Image (cartoon, rainbow, N blue to C red; front, top):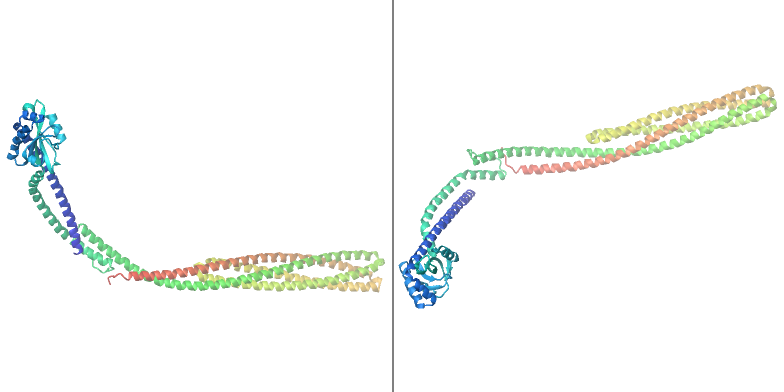
Length: 570
């Protein structure tokens, strides 16, 4: 049985079930109503016969039976047997007292196993109604003595006068099964007549359902093909404004939309797969470039550390030079004071010429020491010049490395922007270091020039002292010349003191500049360390992106494989 037939018979069975249920409910209601009417008619018939047959019973015989006269009981039993003989529908008749004790029974009751003196079932509500109204009544259906019964009760009055008391009750039994038989005989025709149109309605309904579900079968076949991935099916042509026509139109729209979506997804998945592969290749190149940048930055960091070490050494050297120039300044001040003392002694005369000769010897000694100090200062200045040359070379190399880093960051594109900013800062610091080094070089060359001048002056002073000493030793006449020479020497010493003070000031400026260079070098080192850290983080991010690109390419290929399962119109 195909799907359409299953649906047709299911709907037909449901509708037939509802119709049959309605038929059953109606039949039961009809049966119950007919049963109640027949039961009421039977009850009326029962107590009517019971009431009529009370005339067959002599009230005086009832008194005798109550008094214990068995012959009277037998007599009354024979008399009431007449009722059943003439009305075979009844099961038996008997006389009972108000408590249900049998006073007399006909032969049919005796055949059922009951006799005078036995207690028989009574319907208390019916008996109560009989006593209150002094009218006949009937019981409900009950089961007693092996059969279902219905009993009609009629009062027997003393002297048959309704105004007197009730001395006994005439009871006639009716077999209750007859009620069902009569009810069935009454309703079976109606039931049969009602069933025929219901069956016809069910058959017509099944035919209409079968006719209505044929388009639904076509829709099911169409939907099954679409569910299996066949999107090349033609549109359903089911014209109509009913629900099935609307369903077919909506299904056609759904298939057309799904066909468009699958086509777009197929094209997009192929493009995504191709783009993912290209992006993965580009990301791998960026990763290689980032690794190279990281290596170059590490080299820059090593160069910065070496530069910082050299600058620290140069700073210590400048500190030593400053201390030495402070000593030279102190010595120059002492020479100046001694020259003044010599001039005072010369003015005092030849008396003090020996002291002047001694003083000139001391001046000669101090001047020689000054010449040695000037030579030392010259050597130190040359060493500083060499150190500045090294610093200049390091700054140039740092500038080149920063330029290379900026170029690599530009190649990295969006991911290298942060790196490019740091590289620009390093380049700026390197340029500042180069400029500061040039300034220091100019100051050092000026110091060297001044030192050479001071050395020349000092050599001249030494020569003058020698000449003065010789003249003092040769003759006292040359005292005036010696006085003049001492005056010149004093002037020269004052100039030398000023030059030494200027040199000391310049050295302090160089030391300050070297401190700035050292601070800049420290910043360069820290910035380079940060760049190394950022470069490593960038390399890790690029590797993660490469992994994601590979995963995206795999997902695109899987999506393409799933889309290929659908069959589209070519």
